[in-house]
Length: 289
Image (cartoon, rainbow, N blue to C red; front, side, top):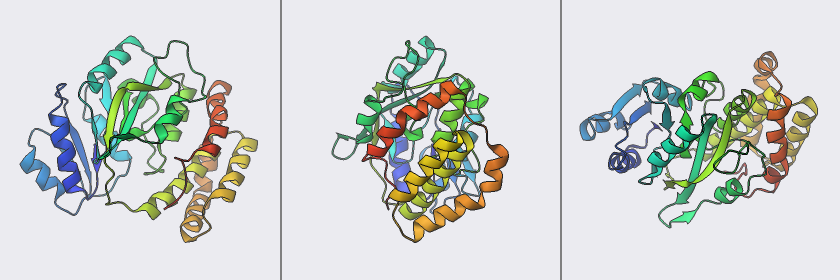
């Protein structure tokens, strides 16, 4: 679990995780919080393994957490989410039975109302074609805070990119997993509850989301498709200062993108091509803040 300046939400989530019948070993990576998060975790939950980073590592904090574990599977959790009892045990059974499964994303329930997140319908009806043995619909990408990953697959692709930091960081990792022959699926037997924290910088998240979408697109997609996706993004994002900043960030990273560009092999590209129309119609994937 990664966290930043959300002490109360984190403490509530930890209480729920530590009450799970699976009795998971919990690692918290505190991304430079200034609200007393680290001290509160040490006092309230001494059994939790705490990594108090002096800086905000973003999604790379998950890499730090994974490195602390020796388990074959790792469940990610955000500081405003928690796993339903039995989900982690079910995930372990599924991974045991399917050795080429890299990531399983669960069903997300929005609290306090107990309704399904709108993204669930898109996961359930994913147009991606995967291996016939998959225990659920194949996915092109995943939602880190609602997913369980296979440690070997995670390590093989190097985890989350330091350059992307946070915001849509899963897509690049998913692309590299697909290129390496790993599978990702939606598994409805897994349930994650999400009570969205109000402590968030929505503008910064949108800025990073725009930048990271462009970077990932040009890092891995064929040139014509990358251009088409870029033009679609430019037509559909809000025309405001946040968008301009996101675009400028993307341009500044262009030399790095060109150096690191590795176009996906056909079998992996097919996954992302299958998602294009669904992503354009999506009401849950909008760059708004």
